[in-house]
Image 1 (spheres, rainbow, N blue to C red):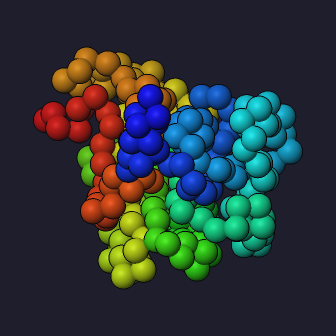
Image 2 (cartoon, rainbow, N blue to C red):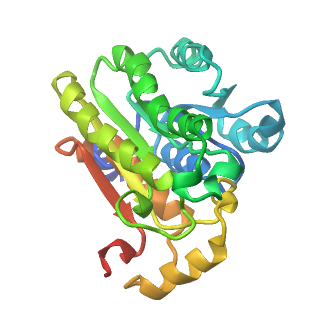
Length: 264
């Protein structure tokens, strides 16, 4: 039994001793929460974020029992990310991985035709959903002295036209391009960068997409597995990309969508 335990602890498929920051926990259905729960089970020490005090009432009952340190963070506040990273380093000492699971657009722009979106709304969606990942990397990488992983969340609408996905399609396309450029720039420092692209899942953020249930039904119809993916399946992929088992990978968008991205 001792030999088995030693082999497990030596396996690259765990996060024992790793320290991570996970952004975007909203409730028990959010992808960020799934990632936090999975990383904790694999042995990571974590700091997680929620948007504000209102969100904290839903999130803290999830994180507190697991010993996950929770910090409020609204990335539209110019100082928020800097203060978050300072708080995370104060608690953890260093970072081995960061998971960015934040996406937002004003509803009036999200529900509009792309050509009708406002400049201000488009810019806010890009700042929150895309550029915040670059800013986060700039702040975190100096504290990733042993290398590590930066993960963000994308969607098929970055590469294909998905009805009603609207301006988030171009925003996610920019995010996936950002991943590739960041991978090139940060590779020499041993930092790997990926986008995870889940199939549609019923989260608070997704609820703002018009005709979302139709999108769900279409995904089930076209996917080879004939179903949606689960929160745990998304989280397991993200966790793998944070482990040493993925040390030879960077710059990719990796799908976890029951295979629907492969279908015409």
